[in-house]
Image (cartoon, rainbow, N blue to C red; front, side):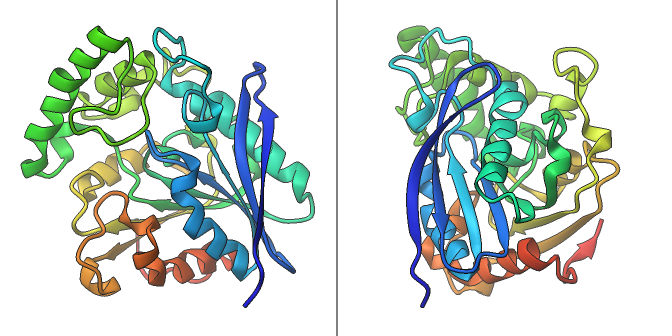
Length: 294
């Protein structure tokens, strides 16, 4: 078995924000993979999958968005950080630093949840050869599983409102298990999640300039049958934001992986490792899609 090594690194976004990442690598790499996190997930959450990919022949960069994990300042309360900053400033910087580390390798992208939302905000999105989207969809509450909506309503208007008022940020309390979020990140996320088209309504206003119709790198999506958030409808609306990118879709159930649950985040846990070989094969080789073309 190949020996995988990792090292931490810091790098700056265009506006000077210092970001933190971890680089995983093994012998004879043939592809570079950028791992973009879901909302509130620190980069360490993806370490098992990143190490696996490195062992298969990749150089993998995981990183924290500004305000998260190793990329946050002493206090994020009353911070001006907003959700689009992650796509407009942090993701492009991560692509550039990965390219600088391994300029001879093709760059690919493994995105979890919100990590797949912002390709169209990246001025350097054309550096990406292909994308693996895992549990990527809109956050619109009306397209999520019916049984999950009361919990979301509590999150948006109960827990979230209280936490902003009391702490100036969304803290890890009352059922929110993610990292603390800056206030503007939470407010924008909440506003988009109450619109059927999610962020697309802002394409001509607050998200300008944007390049969504210019994204042409292929997207292969994995959806999980027990995920109450990334449902087929929520996924469909999100991918409508990329009208010119080739798309394909694979459904996976817990039974397929011989686990009790996958949900919205379980695909990155070691018990779901049987999935990872398929994801790596797509990123490294762009092999024939077994799912349905969209």
